[in-house]
Image 1 (cartoon, helix red, strand yellow):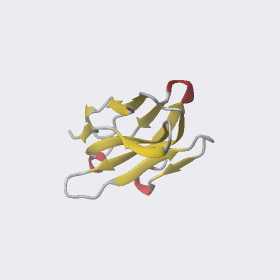
Image 2 (spheres, rainbow, N blue to C red):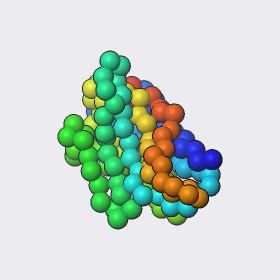
Image 3 (tube, one colour):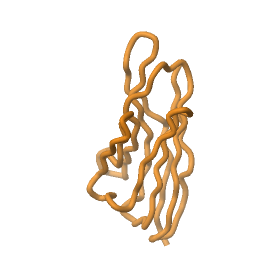
Length: 119
């Protein structure tokens, strides 16, 4: 069984920084893209950033230039460095990964970690 576990969320003041991490575990054979989405109260879940096994990245327009996604393939981990945080960044952040197990590729999700930006 594959699991994704996020860590690093919390409360931060506007202009501050946080680093989120996501670790995968279980019987996985290969990992394609990994990424982060977020969902604020009353809003739809949106893409924050995604990184492919090639190293190429995609960012949501609202976080470009402020957030940086990275991955450590040997550890099957993905991180999100967030800087210049704004109150609008307040949301639950979810890690996701497209993973190959014994017989198929599946999109897996973590349980989410809360990020609150407030003074």
